[in-house]
Amino acid sequence: MRINAHCHVFNLQSVFTPGTKKILENRLRALLKDFAILLQPVLDFVEVIIVNSRAATLSTPDDPARLFSETLDRYRRPEVDELRTALQETIARLDHRRRFSIAAFLEDLFSAPASVTLLDIAGFISVGFSPNMDEVTDNLFHAMAKGLESADIHDDELIIVPLMMDILSENWSDYGGEVEDIPDDRRDTAEKELAVFETQRQGTTRQCLRHPGRVLPFYAVNPWRPGWFTDFVKAIEHGGFVGLKAYPSLGYLVGDIAKALDYCNTHGIPVMTHCNDGGFKNDAGYEKLCMPCEWERVLDAYKLDNLRLCFGHCGGDNKFLPRAKDRSKWLSEIKNMMSKRPGKIYADVSYHTVGMGLNWFDKSDYFHMLESMLTPLDGCYSTQILFGTDYFLSMLNLREDEYWPYFADHLSPAQFDQITSTNPAAFLGLDPQHPDNSTENITQHIDWLRRKRDEGLWATDAKPANWLRNAKGF
Image (cartoon, rainbow, N blue to C red):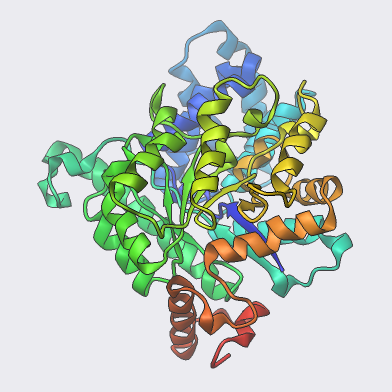
């Protein structure tokens, strides 16, 4: 069994809000460098397509070349004018072949320069603009199988833990507890943003029914959303979700979701939180809201002694390196919490690419630190490290099928098995041999799958995970 304990299967349509656009702009600007001039007009063009059609293929009566030209008209800068002809020719060529799509447009646009970074961005955007979440999920499973083909792992042994995202442009709960409390001039924006998340929720549960037992999703909470706690409990108890995903750098405090954390502590629901100084953040400095010390204060204050908590990204791969900036505030604090709460505090290695020679860092430094944490000595953390890739966001740097074999090659077979199977199963509360003895979140998921199967809602070609066949009724 191989578990990707940190990944995403949403497409951009199911997560794209005004807040998402702002965050993507900030995240991509540095990567684009000399081509950053393209970012704003391209994002605006993308927004037009998503908002108008909510589909990856342009389905409006507007001529694509003219529509993009009008977008460029809002940017009367010489650099943009110089690119206008080439861009219009790209769109016209794609449209002439009757295959115009955002993905194809961006692939053509970003593949022209001889730059790996731009090609990576093109791949990232192309997956993000898949027409539905089915395609993103299938791409992920295909890439996992390819990356593990030398290990001869059967498809029914591949498991993913997709994490939802709930990105909002502002705190809608400030207006009151219901959407109806939001002023008329803001309500339309709020309703559209809230509807995007519902699309993502439905798409996520659909993946569970297409791949029973192989998709164990975490529900994203955001206290800026009216009714967020009630919706979370419903998703866990009746919606097929097995865990909670937190992302404080979107603008809220860990204490703002204490009610949900207390529920998780009581009912054995695992929690995954974003934990590094990068990623998605609504404003500069918001990464501090993700720091381990913020979590430790809440765990102590609310006596959440039974909470299984995973720090996504383990503070950031750069914190594994000598002389890392603020290392003691991220990795060291996580390790201290692991020592104080054995079996309760976990961390994953998702989006850890510095050990792959993709920049100036010495990869031996990274794996030296990781192996020291996986060596079974007193005070070690070998049972508390999880494997994850952060697909498809990690495609900005690395393909999924390259991620798995690289770690397999640099760790011992026992260490690789520990972080890709034993540890993530323990974090999830999954007992693969005796699933009915798993923690409450997994047994509820099994019951949910059984009901949906009996209601005839499984996909016609659904193939259950191997572990699920060990559960009663399967």
